[in-house]
Structures are given as C-alpha cells and as structure tokens.
Image (cartoon, rainbow, N blue to C red):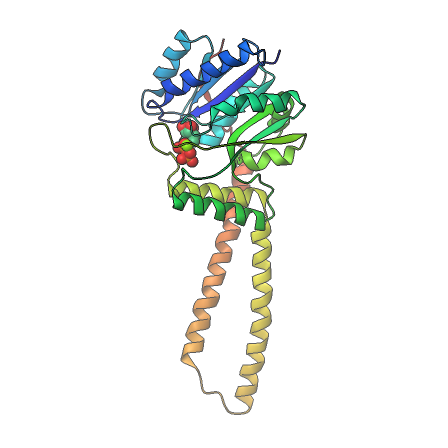
Length: 314
Ligand code: UDP
Ligand code: MG
C-alpha cells in the first residue's frame, strides 16, 4: 500500500488550520478505509515563519491527531520555498506527495482521483481548475494574461494549474536535483517529464483569512516565472536594438541629405521626441538585462533556500 503525504505551506493561517486539518485527516481516513493509502500517510503543515499562532496550532494538532505532522521554518521564506522544504523533508518518508494550499481553495474531494492516476503509473498529476467563477474578474483577467504571456515567452506551463499536484517520489527526487534559488515550481515540473495526467476541479472561495498574494507579490511572481524560464525578453531587446539601429541609419542619411541641400531647418519636436523615445527604450532594456543579471547573481551565490527550525515527524 502506498504512503501519501500532504504538504501544506502555511503563512498566518490560524483561521483556517483547524478546518484544513480536519478535512485532510478525514481524507486520509477515507483513503485508508478504501485501501488507497497506508495508515503511515500524513498531513505535513509547513509553517513559513507565521507571525500568528499557526505553529502553536500545528504543534497541538500534531499531538491530538495521528495523521498530522509539522515543519517550522526559521523565518518567512515565501510560498515556493516553504513548499520545497516540505517536499524535500517528506520525500524520504512516502511514495507520493500531494501539495496544496492551506486555505481549502483546492477541492479535496478529487484526491482519490489523484491517487487513481498515480496508481495508473503517472509520476506527476496536475490539479487543473475547471472555471474561475469564484475569482474576482481582476484576478481572472490577470491570471489569463499571465498564462498567455508565459506561452508567448515559450515557457511550458499547465494552464490554470497552481500548486495543487501529486508528485511521485521519483519526480521529487528529480526535482531535488534542480539547484536553482529562484523557484517557480509549476514551471519546473513540466521540465522533469515522466508520465503526467490532469485532474479537473472547482476552485472554492478561500475558507477563511485573506490572500497572502497581493497584486505586488503576484507581479513579482509572474516576472520571476518569466525570467527564470525564458530568455525571450533578451532576444526582444536585441530585436529592438536592431530595428532602432536600422532606423537611425535612415535618419542619418535623411539628415545628411537635408544638410547638403541646404534644407536643414531643425525640428525641435523630432529632436525632443527621439531623445525621450530612445532614452526610454534604453532604460527599459537595461532594466530587463538587469533582471537577468540579478538572477544570475542570486544563483551564483546559491544560498540555502530555507532553514528548518523544528520538525515534528512521526
Ligand atoms: N504562503 C506561504 N508563505 C507566504 C505566502 C503564502 O506559505 O509567504 C501560503 C499560504 O499560507 C497558502 C498558500 O501559500 O497556503 C497560498 O497563498 P494564498 O492562498 O494566500 O494565495 P492565493 O490563493 O490568494 O493566490
Ligand atoms: Mg489561496
């Protein structure tokens, strides 16, 4: 029988944790009863340096519930790093891991389907949202824009899949060989390969508490995703450079001809216009190159991605 771990990153989630623990434990109970998972299966809550009572709750839940265990990170490391910490800790204890958010937005009722696909030999099973009816129009619009841009940049992504997925032990072993510091897990999984499948589910409203992904973090995450997986922006810059160079030759010839024929009535508007335009393009391009240099800087330093403070494993 397969041992399944649920890895749940939590940041200031005291409002939802008891309910999440209850529902996930009930799921494990059901799986054990139906012979789909062993009783060694666990829910691993990863406390990502919460400032509320999240860790106290995890600790007390782990005393009461056989299925609950926990991991406390030394500080807030961000969702992706917290998830990675959970995956790397749990991988040696189980056959497969299902990662999901603490807020119960991902429908836990489809978990047996994940395990079904896993037993059919899939190493990665993606949870894909059927519709985004519960999202605000804004979140839906920005999300679709994001997937569209990623596609244009040549990044392989599963549309409408966040971090609700099952990974086999060997898929996680493969993931552990990725040394990158800039984590974008949903982009890394398709790179791993193996047999995959999709499971469709309805995304619920957040059960309680508020989103930890405000617009600023969302944009940062999207930029991170693009620059971690695609060098197309750099190529676009080369393209712009080429076009501007070509135009400047034409302008130069025009200016020379005007000068030589004595028609050099200087145009103030065109001068000012081109200064601002070229200046703007240059700054933008330097900025994009800077993004990549910043990434290279972080990767070269190769700092550890998280530190574990306390682990409750049983
Ligand atoms: N989260 C985390 N560290 C952070 C921010 C978020 O571990 O710094 C967790 C959070 O507790 C939740 C998951 O990441 O379990 C997704 O966050 P959220 O539900 O707020 O994002 P949204 O669904 O609104 O995109
Ligand atoms: Mg959420």
